[in-house]
Image (cartoon, rainbow, N blue to C red; front, side):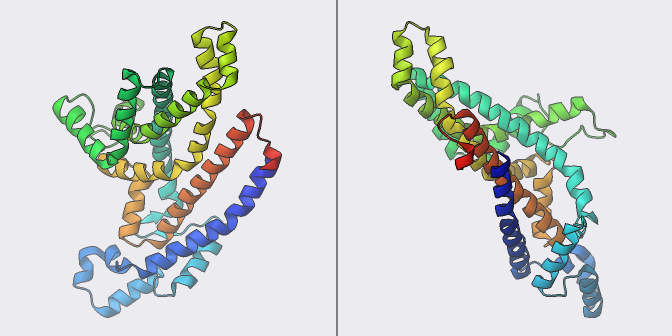
Length: 322
């Protein structure tokens, strides 16, 4: 396990270097002007000399390769730079927002796995039944629905029509402190929407995996020995059928991040995704590079976790051979 993690860590180094370099290259080619984004309306009446001085102070007057190298060498010492759009150090921006994004994604991912497993097992028990057709149709329908559409529909239904959940934010309007009760009520809707966006894949994968497992000889043998249907389903078929789902953990991380970006924007959730949008539109090089590096590291860590889980739960796979 340690050897696999070490190899993946060595592989991650050049990947992160290429990704961060690409971020600076794309941002440099962007039509957005970071100086005007930083100055706002004041840039409209400023002369060229003032804009040039501001460009020099922000460090965007140098070639993008030089900016990338300066940011990289500083980041290795722990200095991620200063965010021009947030007007604070990048490390502080990430530190304040990471916990809220992690909370949102963790709740959504756990709910999607739990509900998807239950629905998938129910559908796989009797292929072609009413339950199977209903669950499968619902999964394909949700798969085709854009996450922002689901988010807007949820706001209209739960916040505007039924008025049982807040429409957005982290705390109630006018609140001066963050309390667990307020966070709980405010996270339910965005976490539920993000979970619904991830639910179809888990449901369909579990249905397929458990359905295939029920047709295998070991499961048929368990039934022939007179074991109860619950024991056969939960003790044999489910364990074997969940193995393909483990590979989803890593592959779903990019879509989870993308979905979180849209969900946080709709619900005004103070997470990393909202800061990513602001950094991209303002061409905030240090913040954009740090957030992209963080997202890339999350994807690589997700792939590593999927491989480790597969190696631990599947006796046919040896971690030493991976």
